[in-house]
Image (cartoon, rainbow, N blue to C red; front, side, top):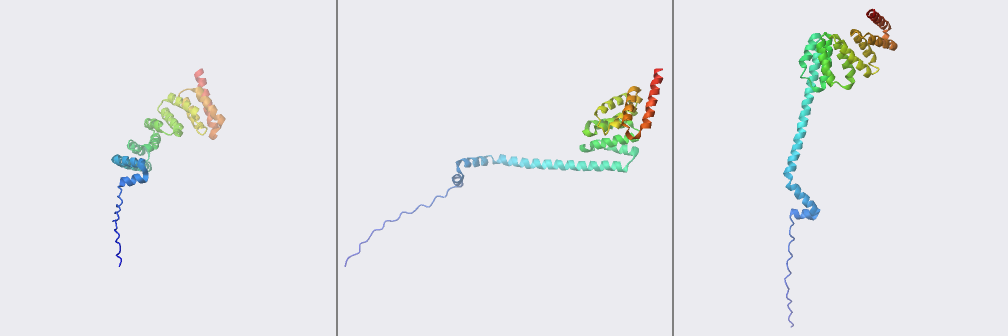
Length: 236
């Protein structure tokens, strides 16, 4: 009986388990060395980036707080100014407005100064009126310029400074729009007359006559006649 030949079996070499790549190697394999360098730079400087982000957040919070403060101040100023106008008349109104000076929010200063100037004029306190007209001249919007100029001239005229009032009104005459021109001319004529500048007063009244504004023809004719008589009296 034939014996079976035994075949020797060589052991099969064991396959090595795949080496687990670290995060950095996987990162580099996936996005490349250049991107990894950027990543490492971000990691190295992360404290600075974090601090900058916190600063931006805090800065935004600061601006928000400042804006809220401004809004509250404006609301309080509007309320205080409205109360002064609604609850007071005459000298009491002027006193109330003057107490608010220095407490009014900046955006409301033009309105405050205008109300104070008008309140002072209404009670015949022309020095205080001029003070507020002068304050208003420095902060008023451009479209208030003619009104403010006329207010200053009126206060000057009532304070006996007709020459200065006439000079300011002569300047306004060159700047006034057609809408304001009749008022500026009438005030200029009165100021020039008070200053004894008969020629300018007569010339201005005559210009008003040509405009025939407001049905004042009888009044203007009377003023022209009156000025001519004064000019004749001085000439004789």
